[in-house]
Image (cartoon, rainbow, N blue to C red; front, side, top):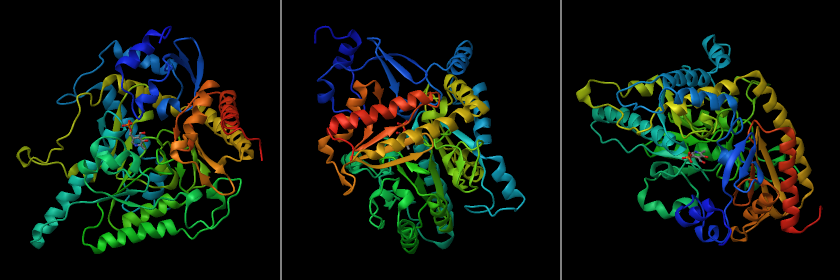
Length: 507
Ligand SMILES: Cc1ncc(COP(=O)(O)O)c(C=O)c1O
């Protein structure tokens, strides 16, 4: 293509993009990003776009944040990377301590310690004390999976040995529609047919259980309304009964689930599917009641993304930055990535308890070591960025502006209910999904091949707003550094794009 930007040409010639039909990609000149500032991305032609999905859910405080830039520069003046195999380093040690602090919110600890409140998901109080660093969301999950597997296998082998039996393989339960990453172990925990079906031969088997998806729940007897389906649902928590049944059935087989793996409060790649308040805590209690470990995948939900309202305590609690804690659930594994470095560098962390850690201690020749690691584990530049990002996140200014932004997003989204192709709008904190349908009264979905979500996002891009759909669900996830005006522009672009794509007037 004549006149095409040089980098666009090189990209088309050499790069293979993730989750992308490359035949379509090669039809046009790609947007080549040259710079970013705050919530704005600028391409090589100088065109500006709002980064409405925070660069695939990673960015927290905006691009080129002066504090994160400075922290990385300072670290770069010392060293970019040295191995964590056999060596410790400054920023990673400090980051581990800070993550442990954030993962054990004080109010909860106090309540449990002084007995003023029953620990919500098992006792004695569970503390996350150890941090295993890796590279991305998928590896954070792989680490949790392998640790939970090995911990359970060892515990059960010891029991079986004394009973003279062979222990069954530890088995995992995750939610319908689950997505936990693209490495083989993470894929085995996933249940998105389209992504995962082809690799069935490579995977170990994990089970799935119904997740609450109020808008399309077969047990929700409510007729469609112009509100978030969680608010007008009419059911008897049949989804939780399914969780209980699943655990009981597996227990009867003599091989109780080793762990329940879940995204707390809202499932992301499943289609931005939020859980009605109370679901998470009850599901966690069921799992605990059957002796299962809890693996919380907070790759998307972590670091304040789900807002600062604590549904268990019915209060705003700015100290809570992880979604699980909003319902008083303390998992055995907390998997973090994406926002960990503020969206700057690939780094992940899996936090776990002393009990899990202890199971891997022993004499050298017992070989209880956790044989797992990555070349860039505990990378200094990533750790320095993460420390700066945490600092910003926990500042009163960030809390205030996130609160205001969340409110603006909520108000603006209300304006979309007038469109007949909007079926459901679901917002949790600073993330939202807008589900497109053929007609809101029937909830009839678009077939995937109609590319409804993609067409709307392409129209948004032409209006200077970038995001990616999940099937028919448009994802809005502004960086915390976005201004209210930018959030208003984002929603207006979505409104305008839906009208243009569906060529329909308001109902
Ligand atoms: C909930 C969740 N877990 C895990 C992952 C995998 O993370 P990564 O793409 O960094 O490997 C993702 C990615 O979107 C995710 O949303």
